[in-house]
Structures are given as C-alpha cells and as structure tokens.
Length: 222
Image (tube, rainbow, N blue to C red; front, side, top):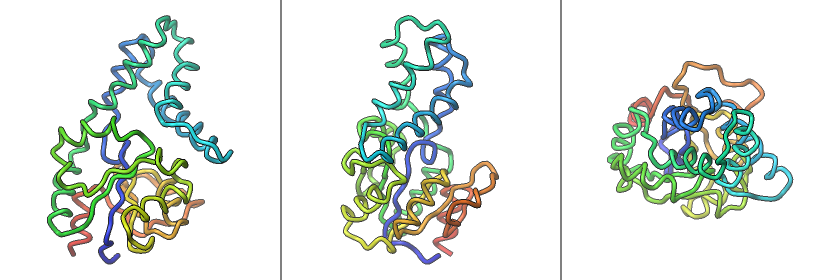
C-alpha cells in the first residue's frame, strides 16, 4: 500500500486498552468479565440506531446498556455505578505500540486524525497523557456526523473535514467491521491484528494487515 495522505485512527481498543475497565466493574459488584458483554452490546445498540436512521451518543448508549445489565448483580446506586464505569474511559492507557508508531508516522509527514464512535471530551485526557496531541492534526467524533461507524456517512464526514478524496485516506482499526465500513465508503482499510485473530470472510479484505502501529510505520516507510 502506498502512503495515504491521511490516516484516520479509531480510538476505543485501537489506540486505547480497555482492560483496566474490568476493575471498575468489580468495584460496583459486577464480574470483570461483564466488560466484554457490555461493550459488545453498546456497539450493537449504537449500530441498531444507525441502521434505523437515528442517533444517540456513545455515552448515552453505553449508560443505557449498563442500566440493563447491572441490576442482575445487585447494584443499587445505579447512577453512581454508571458514572464510575464510564469515568474509566478518560483514564485508559494506550497500547504500547501506539506512541512509538504514531510518532514515527507523524515525523514522516503522514496526517494523523482520530475518528471515534465515542466522545472527544473522553479521549482528550488519554491522548494528552500519552503525549500524542501534538501529532494529531484533528480529533473527530461521529457525534458530528450523526451516524456511528461503520455507516459510510461517518467516514465521508471525516474525509470531508480533512479535505481529501476518500481514496487518499485510510482507516486504521482493530475492528474488522470498522475496516469493512471504511472500504465500502471508498477509503483504504488497515486492520490492526494484535491478537493473531482471523479476519471474518464476510467483510471486505483489508488493504493492509499489521500487528500494531510500529508495524504500520515499518510497512509505510518501506
């Protein structure tokens, strides 16, 4: 793959490591394993609203799902529990490969822009703490597109803000559904396969597969 003019970077799970959120579930009396069910259900409900041609923010959808799951574990102070769990997003670390990889890409002149289904306010302290804000040209959220990824309008909104044709941009994500959505919108798609998984055959194959952002920098600089 030749070097794209712009790399659109997914945030949740692609840049950030969600594992510390498990302890927040334990803090409120729920099992740590509930993180996986909750996050998947949050994506499901956000996608469902988008498919129904309507919109709700990630925070509202995530809170709503928590309110359906936590009562099964005897959680009584629901507002406090929801605040505690969602508050953990602003304290997440980034994966170890993110800072060195993005630093190299920025130094090589690649435009770096985040595009998240989450909120800009939540991701800002994470990226600031990692020292990444100077490397980012812009930070974008689907809140301003009115459609969650993988709806094509989310990606077209982003390339429009960046002022580039879709084929001059690439979406970088750990989620195959996100890569597929970008490809169907005319962008290129980079799948970050950190866990040696298998890309689902129902999705459009990625333009490039890498193990992490350091690997992506190697591939593009080569």
